Structures are given as structure tokens and as C-alpha cells.
Image 1: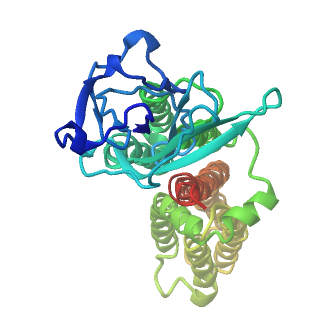
Image 2: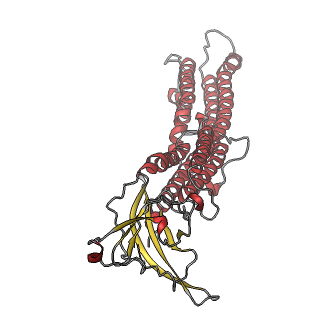
Image 3: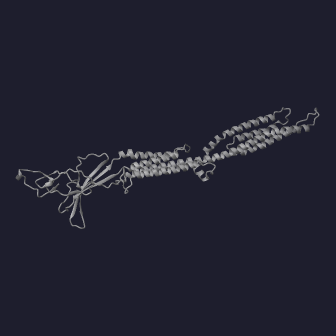
Amino acid sequence: EWQDEFLVWDPPEFNNITKLRIPCHKIWLPDMVLYNNAAEYTDGLMPANAMVEPTGNVFWPVPTKLQSSCKVDVTYFPFDSQVCSLKFGSWTYDGFQVDITNRTSEVDLSNYIVNGEWELIYVRCVRNVVRYACCVEPFPDVTFYIKIRRRTLYYMYNVVFPCVMMSALTLLVFCLPPDSGEKIALGITVLLAFSVFMLAVAENLPETSEFVPLISIYLTIVMFLTSVSVIMTVFVLNLHHRGPQKHPVPPGLKKFFLGSKEGFDAHCMARNVSLKVTLDNLAQELRDEIQLENGVSETDNVNTNSALSPSSALIETVEEINNASNATQLLKNCTNINSAANLTSSVHENNTSKKPCNHTTGHSCSGRTGTQQSKKLPKARVPYEDALLSLTKLLEKHEVEEKEFGEMQDWRRLAQVVDRILFVFFFLATVTSTLAVLVIAPATQDT
């Protein structure tokens, strides 16, 4: 709309005509152009009629479709807001020849059609005057500023939520037991899923190196955490399968990570059940052997108490071994059997030597006593010595196995503790990165 001083008339002189519609090519038209036009300038405009009033006011409602270029900042994608401008001005006239003004700073949006991808925040109209050093004439223009905000519902369901769910899958790597054999497989699968998903997201973003989208930063962070989780999983598996062939857990790590050994001692007690059953059988055999050797008549035993006391001591020693808590204590207590067995044998010898002779037979008492002693002592000592030798070998073997098993269990407990620590660390890192990138950063973009 402009003023043309050559198109002025008096309505009473021209049959009270108050408005004329004239083809646009028959009157003067300003060379108004869109400076940031993204379409071809040769497209032209529709030849609409211009409406002229008696005061010289010309209104040209030309229908057109404008295509403008706009610099997009995708830093906060998909929570971004963009401000685009439409700059209108004369192409050949300066401000002294054609003065451009805006009638109002507001824009009529009554015919605006709501867009499904972008939400219109506001539209403002501002008049600018530019002066160049080469010329004294001003060059005015009218610029429309349009602020739009991306609707996030589509991207929340198709981009953000899948990212968060795949981030949660990374934490499951530390929940799988090492013996399952699927820890590394799960980590690699999640890493590949992130790679494919990042390619899908990149297709919806403009190809620019000026800005890095938040969603790309988030995917990169999660992919980094997933890669580190795979590395840490390899480390945990190495700890879990490290046995006594390597070396035991260092005392500092053992004290710091493992603490008390109550749970391990309870587990070792379960391993000693089979050994205790063997010792029970051994104690019963010793009781039977002692009862067989001491099963003489009361008339033949002069000192019964002195004969039974060492045998009882032998049984009590075996029972103490049976009640021991570990193989080291069992092996230490096992040496008491030898002294108890020797004591029992010496008592048998004394009892035999003190036995009264039968003078009615006429045989020598000393010769018979020596013969009986030589026959009975090997029978009394051999079972004890064989039992002691078998028990000693059994306990030595069990002590070695228990030591190796303890070292293996220490490494496995250490791997379990490290696994839980890594789970907590990665959980905090995932939650922190999710809140910082997807919640806090978009909330501060307008501040």
C-alpha cells in the first residue's frame, strides 16, 4: 500500500466514484523484493488489480507465496526454537524516493493455519533504516520476525524415549552374573543399537558443522558410557575367573573391598561337611578297635581305669578334630592322635606285664608275656598308624584345596563388589547426563 500523488480526483466530479480497480501493469509499482528470498526472482507475481482511492492511496493485494532462507540453530534439537526474518525493501529506490513504513507492529493471524511440526510463538514487524558510508541517502526496510518452536511430542516418542530406554539397557550389563557369559554380548549389542539409532537421528538433522544437537551429544555420551561399560565388564570377568594360579587378592584390596569374611566362613563350613562325615566314621572305627582291645574280663584287668583313660583320650582327640572349623586347625589337632595312640599302646604293655602268672601250668610268665606283647602291639598300633597317616594326607589335601578355593572365592567376591560399584557409578552417570542434557539444558535456552 502506498500513496501516488498522480492518482487523485474529486469524487463529485466523477460521478461519485470512490474506488477504482486498475490492472497493476497500467500504474507505477514499487520494486519491493524479499532480500532473503530462497526462490527464483524470475517467477514473477500474479497480475492482480490495484485498488485506488480518490486520495491517491493505492492498495495492491497481490497473492504470492514467499520462500525465505533462515539460519537454523539445532543446538537444542529436538527442543529448539527458531527466529526467522523476512526483510522487505526497495531494490533500486532510496529512502528519499520511496519511504517504507509499517502501519502496525502486530500481524493479523486470523487466517493462520496451525502447523503440526512447529508452533508459532509470535510475529513482529520492525522498520529499519540503513545508511552506508558511500551514500547520504537512507535505505529503509521493513523486517518481519517470526519465532517458531518445534513440537516435541513426535520426537519424544521416536527419539528421546528410545534413547533413555537403551541407556537403561547399559545398566543391565552389570546385573548379569559373570558365569552367564552374556555380559559382553549385551554391552556390544547396546553399543551397536546406539550406532544405528544415531544414524537414523542424523538423517532428520540439517547438515551443519556450526552447531551440535543435544540429542547427538546425549547419544555420544551414552555410547561412551556403553563402551566404557564393556571395558569394565572385561575387567570384572578377568577378576571373576582369576584363581589361585595367579596370585591371591592383595591385603589392601581385600580389606577395603571385602571387609569381614563371615559369609565366606559359612561357605567353607558347607565344604567341610564331607570331611566331617569321614572323621565321624574314623572316630567310630577307633571306638570299636579300642573296645575290642580292652574287652577283657574284670578278673584279668587289674587297673581298668588306667587302660581306658588313654583310649578315651584318643576318642576325644578325634572328636576335637571333627569339631574343628577349618583344615588348618584339623591338621594341627591331628598330631594329638599320635601321642594318644602311643599312650594307649604303653598302657597295654604295662597291663600285660603286670598280669599274674598261672603257676599251675609250669610255664615261664616272662616268656609268655613277651610273646603276647609282641603279638598284640602290632595289632594295636597298625590300625592307629594307618588311620593317622590317612587322616594326615586327607587333611593336607583338604587344606590345599581349601586355600585354593578361598583364594578363588576372594577373587569372585572382589569381582562382585566391583560389579556393584560400577553399577552405581554408571547409574549415577546415566541419570546425571540424561537430566543435564535432556532437561536442564533445554530449560535454559531462553534465559
